[in-house]
Length: 340
Image 1: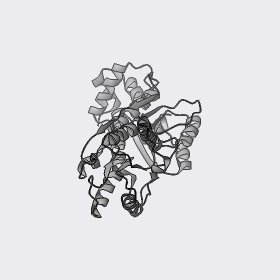
Image 2 (image 1 turned 90 degrees about the vertical axis):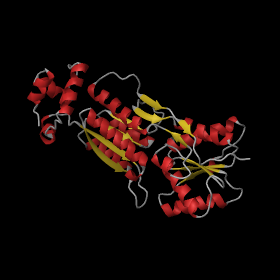
Image 3 (image 1 turned 90 degrees about the horizontal axis):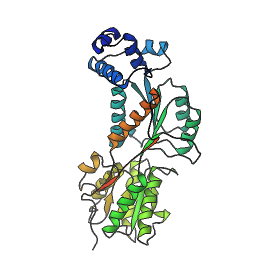
Image 4 (image 1 turned 30 degrees about the vertical axis):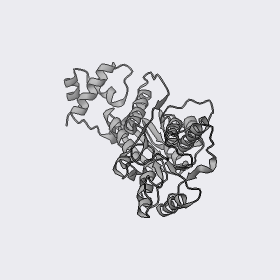
């Protein structure tokens, strides 16, 4: 393994410059030099002694990643393709920037606060954090923080975040269903946070209905259980009741794909008897049959942008925008039929 001195010789810089790049002290290092040194470090698979580094510096070169998510019963949070994809993207980008990732998943609000305050980190990425916790973290954490898919209180604070245009996604999928003749629609949600991801998607559905002079009442919003058997009962109940729902809008492909499979097991034809849509456009949406009409988002890019934004804050580089919003589009496949 190469030493700092050997890396410096290859880069044509001093060992001090290499050390500064490793430690994130780049205020006096030109962007071109930093990129050159980082490229050689990656090429040489340079691995610093992390224990010695943490003891010797104030910057640990570790970026913490906390995912606020309650796991489904008998499952882990990483079994959902959305979670594994975004965490994979974050890890790759953290490594590309010369940092190391420390991951923790929890649904305990106090634990999020405690870990955010006590970990010795260069920066922190927080995913799916409720607004009241985001507010406390933003006021008390003394390190750079970027939030992903989190919503915030109207409290006058500046939040650095990367998130999806969730309301637009809900609007577009409801607009598509309306264009296919569906009026009796139900929305099945992953969470009930207000403000929050699923609530915003539901608001988008309401907006599409309102534009056509229709109402999409709050009683069309159902929160899904963490228990698979309880969800299975709900799916069956929704397709059996009168008047029948002609379409079910899911806030995540995971649940939409699950419903397609479980409903077909009890003899319900998709989309002949009920249409189903998802959200995310992950691998489940493409593998399930019929394939899911869903809302596409670039999950990998979301993870990359979060880390890029965070490392700019860590290095003291200028940032053009504090909130990055990613676009959505409807991916039309086979799980929705046109009503006569």
